[in-house]
Image 1 (spheres, helix red, strand yellow):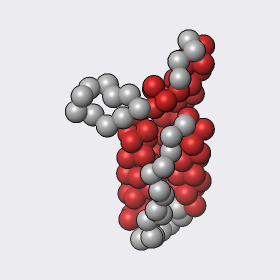
Image 2 (cartoon, rainbow, N blue to C red; image 1 turned 90 degrees about the horizontal axis):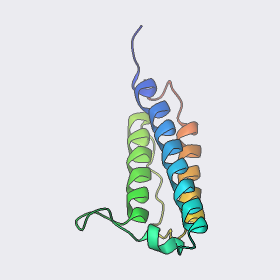
Image 3 (cartoon, rainbow, N blue to C red; image 1 turned 90 degrees about the vertical axis):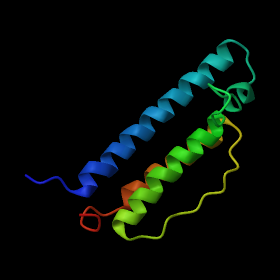
Image 4 (cartoon, rainbow, N blue to C red; image 1 turned 180 degrees about the vertical axis):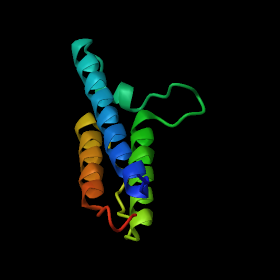
Length: 109
């Protein structure tokens, strides 16, 4: 059985974005429990030369939607990078997963 580009990418991207969403939920829950302003996490970096969390999520979603669109010969959706809250970041992930689900397996074979 051969492995199509669709099977090697889209399900993997959906799973990875699901994991990212779960991590963001844990971060939001932790911030709430510890009475930490969510912006502290959203604007934090793990290292000085890294982007902040919000930008990391934007890059992750841009990468998967761009790859999926190019493999399927579709126009790459453009999202403004304006997310500043956990719900906005979750909405971006959801919007990206919804786009991935529109990619036809036959188009990206």
